[in-house]
Length: 138
Image (cartoon, rainbow, N blue to C red; front, side, top):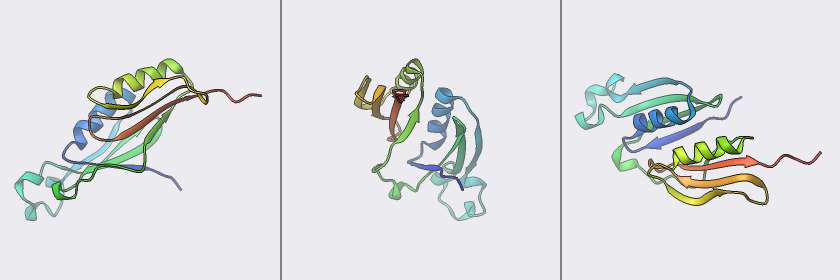
């Protein structure tokens, strides 16, 4: 069994996945547009270029996403995509890269539980936490 994150976008799925690829590397494994589906003939022209389903590999994990119908787009809430790294420099690199056009909820800084921890909502509306945990005492 595996647990995957599925992100919904309002017409920005491809742009977001390209942005995430530029930060994390990895590969976009799949991207299908509405125009590629059997239902394309029944869709309004303005929806044809939207992403029906996509998958990207980030840090060995699959993240999936799509563009929802305009009238179904909702603000993400109740979760954060979390990146955990043992390297403070990598935490800073990732946080700074995600911070382009983002809304910082908590600056990346040292906390009582982490060498670095920060939270932001990226320019696509996706909430992120970047964490560099302190080593557990032996």
